Image (cartoon, rainbow, N blue to C red; front, side, top):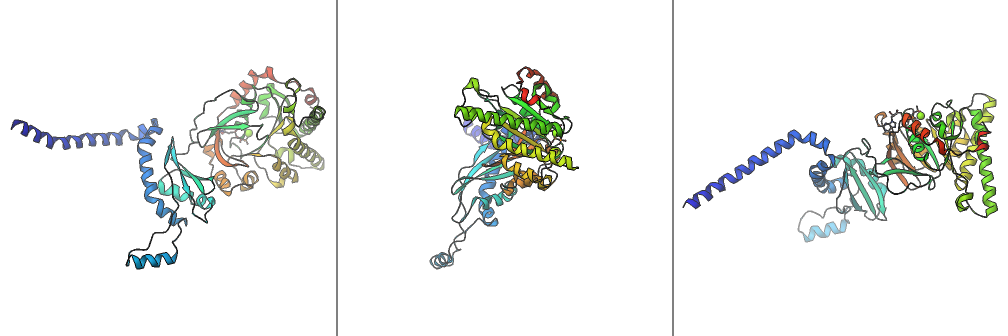
Length: 439
Ligand SMILES: Nc1ncnc2c1ncn2[C@@H]1O[C@H](COP(=O)(O)OP(=O)(O)OP(=O)(O)O)[C@@H](O)[C@H]1O
Ligand SMILES: [Mg+2]
């Protein structure tokens, strides 16, 4: 009897104590939620954000596909047959693309979707903003995975707002520098042996010099010659002067220095031809000339002309740069060209030069023309992403190459840091008398 009574009372108190505990937990979470979310964003996302997002994806997939024109109606005949067989039952639903497992990431998720016949990945790219809205995500990106399949990647916050600095793994490779973080969380690596020449554009204070600082900081400890062309009077590049093998600070010097670099390249060509190799990497290590990285800050200063005399100089500088870009990659001369505004109005040389600069980095730009110049021959989506960068996101850029585009942000390497690194490695500066004579 006693046992029965106690069991009955436990049965009535159990749900109520459970409810009390649940209520305490929920109110605790509500109160401490914002602080916990800020402190442990990844755990918060995986525990609470992701399940909600998964429910949203599953619930909204069909209407989303229909709303974005990605659903395909069944054939009318099938609809009629189903009406006859089903005796007035609703006709079959339109076909929608199928999607696979939702795979979590530290700041979002990704999934694969199968295209229906007649669809192309670009149809899904256009639907990406609608997906972001429907799933309550910061951004959704769509990229082809393999024929017939697209990869849809959603991020809950802008991963570049506070990029994590990925750990440098493995040995340092020659001419390869981790300069920042990619949107995916991976390191943003500039590898000059893979893509030898780069165009870096962006409005004033958009992050061009910070990216160059990161590059110089990574290259300074390597056996590489750095050469600067800074026609803003040397204001930007003179910081690294102890580690530079040569620096030109006005157009006259720049023309002489670039001409000397062309001569150096042609000399290397003669050496390679005599050794019957196609590039300097084919030469024995002890005979291999040192790689030269030429940094040009503010390309417009080289090309803008006010007088006839300047026209000849601008033309000479442009021609030398194009020749360096054409011949340099195989002969160990690499170009990093930065500019605020890079447009065809600077002269025909600029368009020809752009064609040779395979790597493109587009920071926030003041005019759509510059973004078009940097990214225009690529996906129009990349253009939109570049134009959406705000002044608060300095250092954020859209990277483009033949393979596609992605967003990234450079590490904040200040001028003081860059200056200190240049001074630390000044003893590694290769002595190139043929360039110094040009000054
Ligand atoms: N990756 C970054 N992360 C955070 N802040 C950055 C980053 N890059 C740049 N900034 C901020 O933006 C400021 C301007 O950057 P930077 O000097 O590189 O611009 P710039 O494009 O070279 O400008 P200018 O054309 O005037 O030379 C920096 O002082 C820094 O405060
Ligand atoms: Mg600058």
